[in-house]
Image (cartoon, rainbow, N blue to C red; front, side):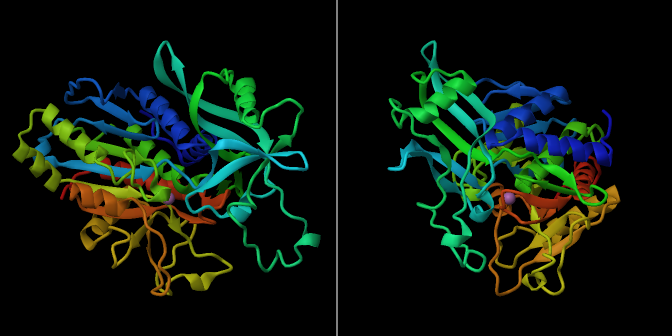
Length: 439
Ligand code: CO
């Protein structure tokens, strides 16, 4: 298969970001990409028959996906090579009881905050609606993906005249200040029907057919390349769809290293702590690895050997040094956009990197001839975490936490250098293909 050039990867990745407003769409588009590269879908509920050389994927909850290739090497000795990422991003989720009507006749959407969103960035932006609904078809519960790609609502700022200190104090009340304006009250329309009418009109789903929904708001404006040489990307959901895309393309393109067992997993719910059936804290990955081993005829003992010979990479975006807040970083560990993927360290294990796992990632970068950088928090800043500690804890596989350096993490519009995702993808490919990346 053709190996993507830098420009192609950047364009395809941006398209993937723009086409994937929710975790469901991120998985849907991943499935299309994998099928285009001869991966075959397995169902958790059906019998599996794996064979050497096979390429497979399995989806959970339409928001989490594990793709893998079966090598022709000895699995017990080779182990798995795993790259993990996450499909969800912070944002606003529509509550049950979706609409509220004010005394002045405004119809507002009733939303809750999902994850650690920077709320100020959600104001005054035309917002669209996407997610999924559950309907009953032929007596069975069925899911339909929804993407109302129209600017249907907005959270207006309060004018500065009523809010004189808005430039020095921009706190928002999460219950009262962030409800998006959907429309003006219409005579004869029940408040429970405004959202259902929108779904009926725009998605063609009869409102009486809808049993329940999981719907999110997203920025209608698309992500773009920007900067003098279009070297940067400004877009929603860079965290973490850029890493999902880099991992997926590394796996899909990878054709060397046929003896290796290559695994790519993208989990939901990282932004709210990963504790769900489709999150990184679930048994989905360890069960799937065990199922692969058993299906290929390994004994229990051989499976545990395989785990002990495995390594993994947890890929999630990292904090680049901010040009206006440069003292927020440790003085000696200062990643910048364009400097390559960032290896994240934390003595308190908020990142799972250790000297061994960092070393194999650095070796992958060297092999791919791409630069890398290092990050560790200032001692007086707690910082974030990611899926690495969950992955390594549940599987007992050494894990390195790495990611593309970004600015404005968790803004509705994040920012990164396009080249860093290419660097990450090349490092991932070397990790999947080259010798010496088992434990
Ligand atoms: Co993330």
